[in-house]
Amino acid sequence: MTTETITYDWTVLDNPVVFDAIRKAAHRVARVSAAQLHLDLDDLVQEGSLLAAENAEQVHGWAGNGDIGLLVTWLWRRLLDKTKTEIQRAGRNTSYERATEVWETWQ
Image (cartoon, rainbow, N blue to C red; front, side):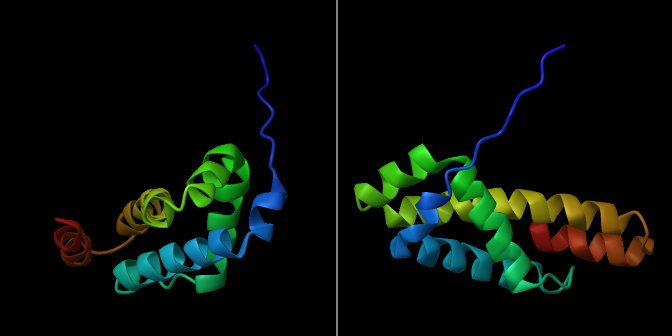
């Protein structure tokens, strides 16, 4: 069995364009998931920062090429995937009606 080490390149966060993209993506996720979970915007920004630092080469490439929309969309989708998992877990501990309501918002 091998252990894979995750490396983070924190210099990606020095780019104000990247940090702005992280905040935009976090805001979008917070708006979408506000009814289902009480997610803290700062937590979403931290998650986005981790994603950017973990995928720094790709993020540097998008930011360097001016593909900010692509960067925001990529971050938004990754954050949304994490949020959906939390919503699904929360749904296991709620009523059937609440779980149905949450599911319908994602359709």
